[in-house]
Length: 157
Picture 1 (tube, rainbow, N blue to C red):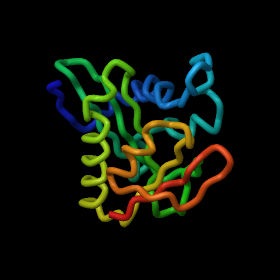
Picture 2: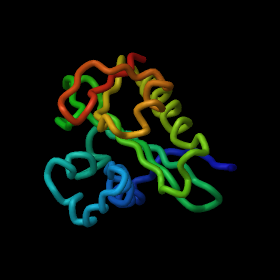
Picture 3: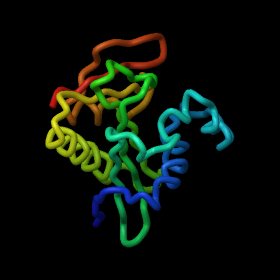
């Protein structure tokens, strides 16, 4: 599948709401939550006022002229928070575009951008059941902590 990866423009920040919803892991056989779930404060931290902090960086993947995936980072006190110098990462793709390597390419590109901008590491949290754990490990993330449901993962740049 042909796709391109590019930086998110300011006019497109609102699209991150769609990708935040897509990033919510829904275990097999479970119903998806209502889209209103993204209004919860613990999820709003990922997108609220995105672009206003110097550490807000985002990339989109496009197939043709359709945005099909997003990866974004910011310094925030989220599930994967390590410290105030480590950006936390969020990534998602629309379901029909998963499995084509687009997510891996988005991950590699955001890590490259972070390294160029002088960051030493990036973190994320992922539910243990999520198939994406393997992709994160393939792109350099290691499990540094865990709780009952999630892994906290870190990638040194």
